[in-house]
Length: 136
Picture 1 (cartoon, rainbow, N blue to C red):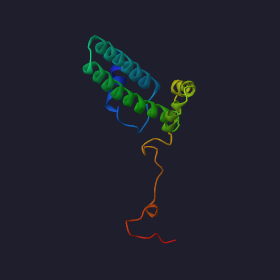
Picture 2 (picture 1 turned 60 degrees about the horizontal axis):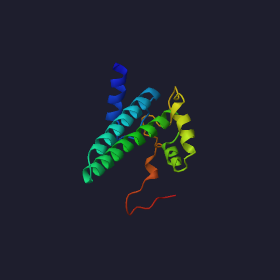
Picture 3 (picture 1 turned 120 degrees about the horizontal axis):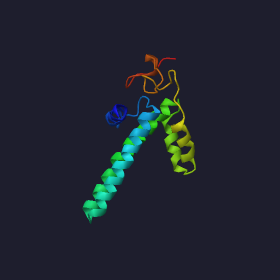
Picture 4 (picture 1 turned 90 degrees about the horizontal axis):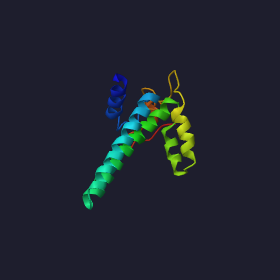
């Protein structure tokens, strides 16, 4: 039981972060908790009527979808894949590919998404100040 609360706590703390990695247990625990909360939100909305029900459902969908999106990106980082794989959900058949990636064990060693947030290292000569010209 302590692992469930740890995974949920980590998921909530990192709900708005796309950087880093998320293991399988943490991802699926957070996903299941979001699904239960979403169904509870729908159940509460079905008991109400009018604008209150619509706004409760809309807020629930937005908050929980964003949390699942961020968790999914971090899960893909754990398998050493870019978070942009989430964009393939435009094609419904790709949901099965992502489901496979989410269920697959993560990379045991370091990935390109560790510590640097997936960004390549930049040297000072990559940047110029406004008005300066880069010398070749």
